[in-house]
Length: 278
Image (cartoon, rainbow, N blue to C red; front, side, top):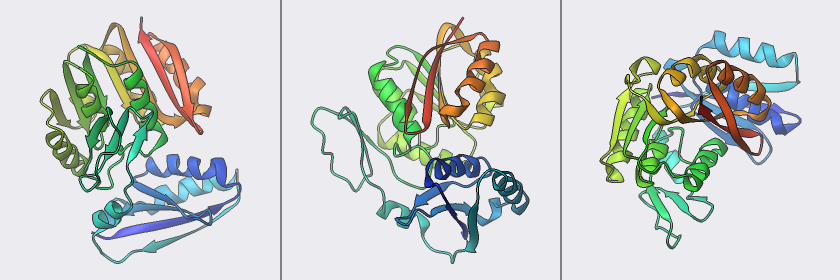
């Protein structure tokens, strides 16, 4: 399958590279790379690319910051192999390591999760996945019924089971991510994860002790009402996938849906917020 490569040069590099990552992920770009010279490169499968969506996004940002960009159609190659060659182990507080099948575990007395890297979001490298993993390690969902929305590689669902969740529902809309998540669930010998292809419409009509949603701001704001309807009274909602500048916006919407914030944290400019259902 052919990919399009979008290269963006912007100054200052931070926080604008991170802002463009968030923007582009919302219109289908699935992987990103920061070059040594500060260039941000973003990749999308050719059939998923919308020239109109990209132009609207870039026109909006041109009003705020000056930048240069160009688009290149890449020749077809084994992109999974390319991605695998750059996959480095992830260490979360020396308590969890996320590795590929070709890595050897390095951390003694730590949880090890093996993820087959296939350009699916959620390997643990991104700040938001790291934030949620760290939170789950500190507050394990032992004996809890968990929903993982936008599961990606399945890493958060897998970690939830390892940490003692009684049952985990993992929902993912992209077919290729579903296939990757299923492979990773099996690879880590998980038995209590139900993997569902779909979006909020496929959330089972049950009440959860904990809902995890590592998704972008727009999807979170649209889905908060259904999260509220699927969270037990006193249950928890853990959200990430957005910048700290979006905190107030999402806290206000959550409050409208009977969620009260109990904690928040950040890694670089990315945020994580925990709520409790009133």
